[in-house]
Image: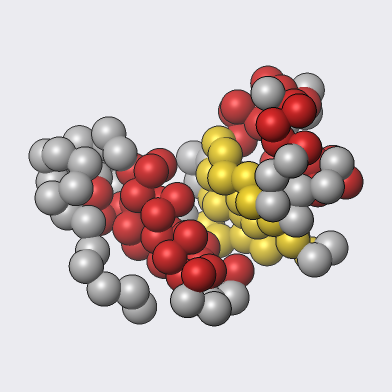
Length: 121
């Protein structure tokens, strides 16, 4: 996986997976290390926060996980919301918020697309 990661401009990953690949449990430290390998933007999802490292800066968004009707697809929905915001020129902070909104919305319905928001904030 590391050779593929080294070729990424944007890496969207879970904290656990990133820790397994790079041997560290601190999301910020690991994201900085991965960025040092050439990745321009590293986004890390964890149980209580989402963080992004880009342009030498670590940004976080605290999240609250409510009871989920169906959690399948939440990570993919987060990724889609994040990418959509960035492609529209949104800041990393906007993208984190939009991704979190999309991920949370998907958990409120059975199926991984029924609750997906149709507009960006």
